[in-house]
Structures are given as C-alpha cells and as structure tokens.
Image (cartoon, rainbow, N blue to C red; front, side):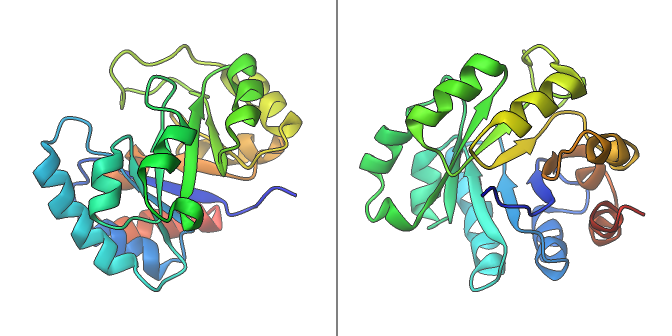
Length: 204
C-alpha cells in the first residue's frame, strides 16, 4: 500500500530563510522536507543542513537532502533524493553506513523510468514535471496531469507529483487521484511560509 502524506516540501532559496521554512514545516506536520541547494558550495549546504537537521530531529518531519550523498551523510539526514543522472540507489546505500534506516527517493520523468525504478526499489519516486516550472535549468519535458496520474496510479511505489504545483492546482491533482505532491515556489516565495503551508495542507 502506498503512503499518503500530501505535501512534500522542497526548499530552495526561500525568501523567509531556510530555518523559518523548516520550523513552519515541522509545526504544520509536513511529512517530507527536502533541502535543494543546487548552486551552493558544499560547505554552505552542510551548514544549512545541520541547521535543518536540528529543527527536524525527533519530529515527524523527514529531512531529505537533494542529490549530494556527502552532505546527507555529514548532517545525518533522514534520506537522500537522487536524479536519473546521479549515482544509483544501490551505490548510495553502499556508501552510507547504516543506510538501512535511511530513505531514498528517485526522480522519474516518464513511464519507462517509473517502471525501471522498481528495480532500484526506492522508498518513493518523484513523477514530473507535471506542469511547466522555472525552478530547474534544462528541465525535463512536461508530462501533464493525465500522464502523471496514469504513472502514479499504476505504480506499486510511493509516488509524489512534482513540477509547477501550487495552491491553485491542488483541486486538479485531487480530481486526477493524485494524493502526494511536491511544492517549491509557492512556499519558498512566500514571506510567511507557515501560512503558505497551512493553505496547501488544508486546500484553502
């Protein structure tokens, strides 16, 4: 049975600051919080990672680091999210001592990648981009709501829709049968992240 948790929050350059977003996520009971700092030097990622680890530790919020295994290990994150061109999940598990307790996510962008993901056995897959999004350079082709829903509903893995999702599009996701969704800009560009997260989680 797939896990239903709703909002998966990805924070990248939040206007309110990384710590404020993490505190808001914990207060609102967000299940997954991912740190994505694509262009930042590793030492800065580690600094922010330690800060977020302290905020999320011993809470129900799972702290995930995007792409960088060394950062995830350094801050003792709850898990690591990998892309199609990153190291394999098997290799990441091998390089992370005591990784049995860690969570591993994998980005997928089409039906074939979603099927291939079964072989790697991630704890969840991201599916998208569902809508156009400016948060990634050289973004993968938009797959649209219908293809995303077909992939998600047909998968045996936990799935998270991602790409261009905001408050206005939640009803469309729900109508398509999509329960879990990742959000970046709607929270990161909001000066009051707690308010933005509350709106997303309540559907208000």
